[in-house]
Length: 178
Image (cartoon, helix red, strand yellow):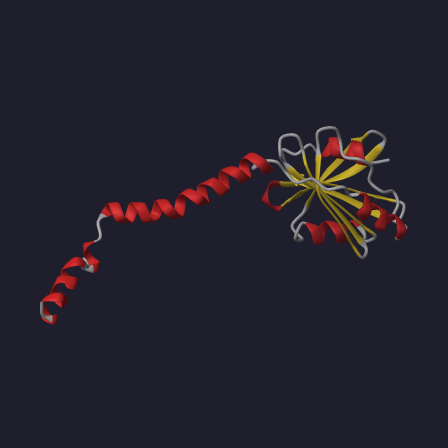
């Protein structure tokens, strides 16, 4: 057998690159997608896909206490979850989810009430009256993107609660206020 015949036989055995079939492509995608699907399903099964990760705000509140903030927030209402807690010098921030998964956040600072409301609501807050929660009077504001805010100053601390219109800010205010 000559070298010319061997070369022609080898070329005939290797298909041209343009002759891949749809079946080949489906098999290639399957090899890639099956492990990815298993990872996603495993994450959902073992780590709770829709479950919020909760945090303990005790360290952030303790830092605010060392900075002489008063009054400090108490525990969140029954059914609420604390999802973030951060102490930045001069500002305490705690994020919550209510039982219906509406978000709300608490911001405490020594800044004046008007300044804090302006800073946190992008300068677009409009005063909307007062809300009495227990024995505490909160000023109510409407912010951008249908946000509602309750604000009060007590002691040396201004407290601001911000959430969507459908978040139960009065329930949060009742639970955290002293």
